[in-house]
Length: 522
Image (cartoon, rainbow, N blue to C red; front, side):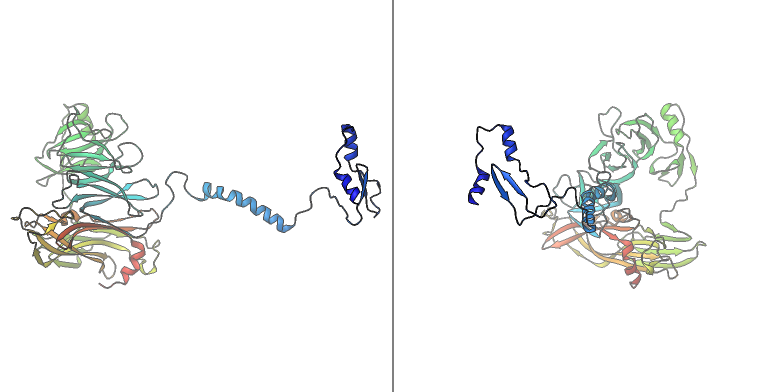
């Protein structure tokens, strides 16, 4: 057996041809009768090998798959294509930054600034959510040159999107007038002592500053403008602003360049400009005039055209807020903090329903609140979600004088002028929900203690109630159909002898908090 096995591995004689070697190497069975059970015998290199016990079976073609193997095979194919299907069709992210992000309650804290003015909704990088933009002014005695500006926050998280810093204190801002760069997003128009500028809401970059027709200098003493139709065929609407409180100035919406100067008849000083189908402007003496946009266009085309405004009845009362057939009136006294304020609720017949007086208080601008009862998730608030959210500042009787060594500002800058007298006043900020239902109650939402510093003149204080009038906003930030409450406040906090100005911005998912508010006691 040993010799026969060695024959298998014996080298091929060199005298054999290729054809001979093929014949020798090929294993041909001696017996062709496969039906017999005798073991087949194979021959190689003159040696015979007989397999007695092993049976070799050759099956041609594949065997039929079992049900389990079929299921496993189909599942493996599905798993291969499932990630592709999910990313292409399941996730709604066909464009960049369009994945929906659900908002959560958040609080942002910023030192050395006072948030002022209205809270604006602006477009940002994420297409499915809105961002917030707010003006701010720096702290007393801050050594920073660029201590004022505009802050933008990502609406769903509270992270800072951008911070536009400037030297002068901003006065007003509007982010719903014009799309300067035609990118589909409205840009913010900001007015300060140096004039008017346009800021892009995604990047926070200035697009232009209002300047003269010769482009040699910026134009100052402007008001917030209104948009009028495109006049120079550049594809962007133009802007009309009050110039030096007595005339109109038409600006290119695309570049900020002055296009036309219009002398306004019938008004010595203009206090307010707004657009209501036609252009309306309110004089300081209380007279309201109206001019058609067509007349403005004709004057720009031909300066010889005479603009003839006509007087209209002034029926605007900024202290009255309507909700259906109910009327909410806010009456604020003068000489705060020794002021008395009243919230009055009347019906459609001007009959008094209820009133709430407050001593040593100032009532900030209310915000109308309404939720469709069919869409409200909480059964306890269905049919009753109709009213106003209002913020009330109430001064305490106590105040204290700061020592000359006291320091105001986080960088420990001393108050050098010892002749200046600074006072600290304590304020209770109350956010309340005025419900318009069978009970017509006021429901407390929150209390906040605020420290206000005044420089001896009670009108020159920080934070100021005049800057906080529009510190509330009700909006759907993440565009999911539910409303959020946005609120901010500023206060001084004392750490040792150092007084630091800190501002807080908060976002609350209002509809989820409604059941808690209804359960609260007055």
